[in-house]
Image 1 (cartoon, rainbow, N blue to C red):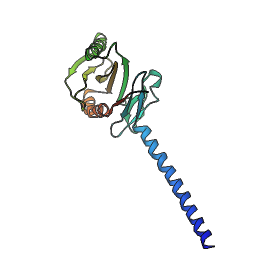
Image 2: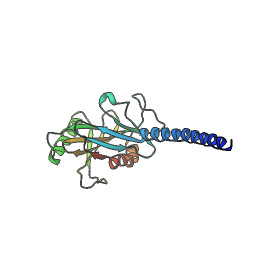
Image 3: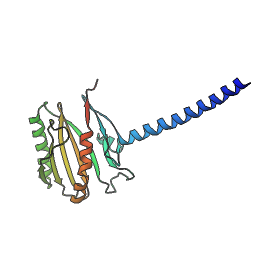
Image 4: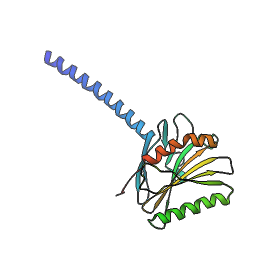
Length: 190
């Protein structure tokens, strides 16, 4: 009888432990899905993390091929609001050289200049100082203020873009952009 009671109590404890463990695992994975993820390309993959207090949204711009969209937690992303965002776009370069990255970045920035944007090249170093980063402030004709950071992994160009409502907000959010850049970790895709 005592043995049966002991078994019954242990089963209740195990059930409670399993239920609590399940809730904890679900909470952890839900949180991780919001703070970062893996972005896959044709011949690359990288891990990226949202800045502190921000979330990673891999759905809202997925139709445009943008799976790395970041904005402040609690904010709503959409065309009708002015939520500042950081996002990552990728392009394939003609070859795996820094010269090709420089050429690509200059052509991209020239396209903005031709459409009325004001641009300024910024000398900025990031955590991985052995990697080439080209940073530009771009003031768009529509009144938005962006910072573009071009970098390369093999023959893939990543452009990490901060889009803000005004220059003061852009400057205030530059550390968030830097957090995203410093969190990127490439891996070979199998």
